[in-house]
Image (tube, rainbow, N blue to C red):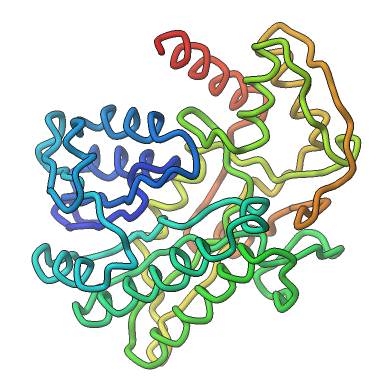
Length: 342
């Protein structure tokens, strides 16, 4: 990745986007971050992430570029990806080299309540990005897919060669659609595109709708935690630093195939952890036992995720190496510091 490369990060106020922006600007890239700062979860956390990268409260205003006070090579703009014209204006003005598209309506369970939000953001919004990338001859589009595309597969570990025609949530269906749309643009317009099927990512500045965050909050406050399926679920918990390290390598390595420069990778820890054990790691880090309320598995949830990351390891040297105990301790330390300051 050239130091002077100009990179667009969508979803820059989000969990992964925030960490990626920091790493790119520290590397010396010129970065533009965009986000619509929607209210799916606490916007105060999103604004706090922006503040951490030197973006002031002006970020609340739509369409106004805000220069970072901390990093001269970073600015942020609040826009909706569904606004095709605004996205095109942005691309035409900024002349990006590469795009990392992380913006999406997240959450499996919320897709049962508000399905239209997923079509707007994940399908219509992604279309804006693809069209803008095509028109502006972007050198590499990296976008977030999800392990949820595998549905409730019994075959483990989950491989990118597996069939992904049976999603069990609308969220998963939109992510599978993104992969198909990106493949089409790679094939038709020679747009280098790499999709990353993300497994369960955790760490400081994480999403408050995620189980580990909810557990930490409830245990801290002495409230019972909801444990689905008796904690007999396995997740390929991957620490944020490991994900970012892999993302940076992927951005740097566009697919080289002549006809269709397109690639899909799994990005996870390749070491599934039982939910019960993950809860125990949080209890240890907090020095406090959880009150548990056991509930049946929820619609759209899968029993196990386990990533086969062989291709990512062999082709770009991806090596996740943060043990759960260490990652959870770092998250809990951040959580206590952040919420004690509120």
